[in-house]
Length: 145
Image (cartoon, rainbow, N blue to C red; front, side, top):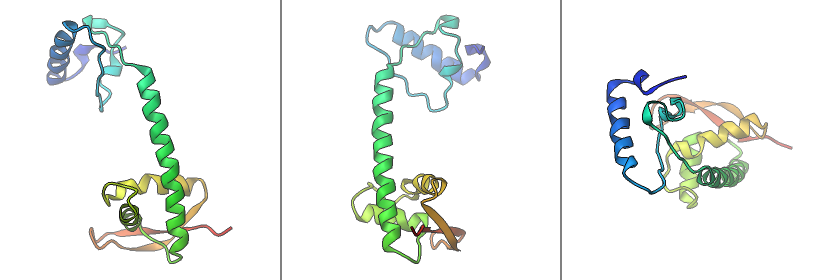
C-alpha cells in the first residue's frame, strides 16, 4: 500500500491543502487527477478520504465510447473516398473540414486509426514525409472487401 508520505513533497503539500479545504465543505468532492496520485492512498490513511462519483465516470466513458465509434465510421468513409491513402494529419484535417472535430489536431484521428488497424479494417500502404514535421509518416488505406 502507498501513503501520502511516499509522494514528492510538493504533491504532499498540495493534497494536504486540498484535503483541509475539502474537509470544511459538505458538498461532494470531484477530483481531477491526471497522474493518478490519489489512487495510491490506503482508503483514508493519513486522514485523507475521497468520494468520487462512479456514475459520472461511467456516463463520460459511454459518451467517449460512442463518439469514438462514430469517428471510426467517418474515418473509414474518408479513406474509402481517397484510394491513394492519407496520413493521420490529413485525415484529421478532413475531419475538421467536415465539422466533426473542433480543430485539425492529428490526435483526433491517430487513436482511431490504431483501433481500425487492430480491427483489420485499414492497413498501411507506405510512408511519406509530413510537410509539417518533415518526418516520414504512415499512409493509411481502407482494406478492400
